[in-house]
Amino acid sequence: MLPENISAIVARNERWTGHAASEPYEAGWAREAVIFVRAVKDPVGEQPKLRVEISPDGMHWIAEGTEVQMPSAKDGLAAARLTQFGGWLRVSADFADGSEATVLVTIHLKA
Image (cartoon, rainbow, N blue to C red; front, side):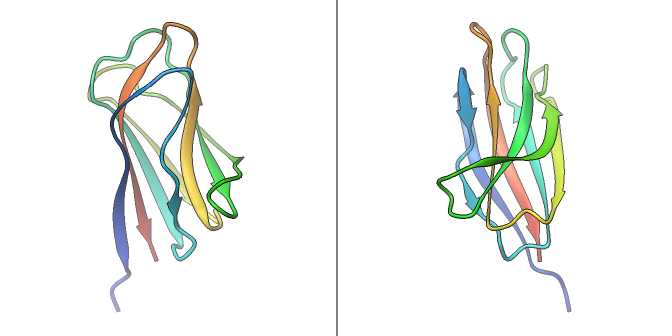
């Protein structure tokens, strides 16, 4: 039997500044996930670390522990690979004053 797969866009052409987060995605059925973040424009200023967050209900979030560096150039990619993540996933980052990034965030899930 072939595994079930899905790719979901949770942020498209969004300008992230300050405290930013992708839309949440319900992923409790999946066995593994890869989250990709692509800079669709040249980022401005120092880029923060991106953190994966998990939630039991899609409203209350905690850091899962995985962190990756935000892309530092247009078309740069960051990726986080996950297992054992519970029901809901999203990514977030805290940008310093004057820093920003325009991103495309996709979550790829496999049953």
